[in-house]
Length: 271
Ligand SMILES: NC(=O)c1ccc[n+]([C@@H]2O[C@H](COP(=O)([O-])OP(=O)(O)OC[C@H]3O[C@@H](n4cnc5c(N)ncnc54)[C@H](O)[C@@H]3O)[C@@H](O)[C@H]2O)c1
Image (cartoon, rainbow, N blue to C red; front, side):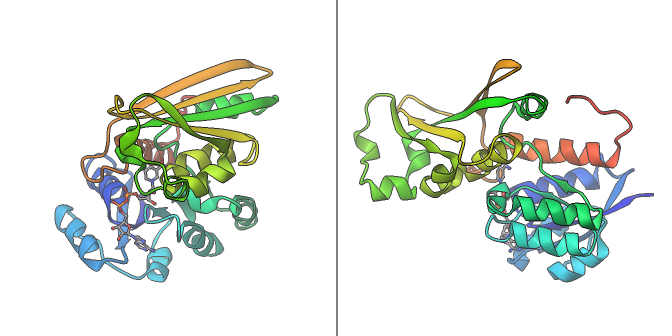
């Protein structure tokens, strides 16, 4: 039977997922409903779909769905997850930053309600290895994010430390600290740092480095992990989503790949 999917957030990621369900995932799923705080965005997305789903409130969407997909905002992701889980709905979350400090209670709720929480790997690579490594002991996880200076403009850390990004002429490390501190200092890096922390050794033990240079043209995430298994390093050079420059195209692709696995799990590849 086709799964009914409700999409909360009709922007770059939500829209990409909706179009995939409307086309290649059609044999397995249908869009039960759309929801967005900006009704125009939901209406614009509906116009692009061959089957026109209803635009409804969050509560109504949860009611109509087997799986609720959140692609909205870190400010609301944990609340959306909680509401869906309480109604025994599976939930896939993209705004992982909103789960920091709340993931444990949500994971417990999912277990109690026999529902699933699904967290796609988004804009980074290496979670497969981290999950395997975590069966043994992981001693260190470091995320090094490289961004051009303009990609860091407006970050609370840059403002608080009065860093003149235009005066930077060479590659330099702007920040090094725990993932917990990094998500406050550079909230736009929040999803990647949060997901690594949740999958690995927690936000207090995960180290984040933010590096910039006027020479950089892409947003690059390097993950380095050490443990009983040895050492792994991954490097992801992301191109931005055509619909939202702040979102990596890989995050959109990851959402659809994860959904595909959820809908048809007869073959599982990796970890
Ligand atoms: N996990 C990852 O690697 C990763 C990568 C990129 C983006 N993200 C996160 O995914 C989310 C979606 O990203 P995007 O690029 O599609 O953003 P977007 O800005 O293109 O779209 C977000 C949409 O959600 C809507 N929205 C905001 N709050 C809402 C709410 N409470 N209820 C309903 N709708 C709401 C907005 O009006 C907008 O239409 C963001 O929170 C972003 O930080 C995660």
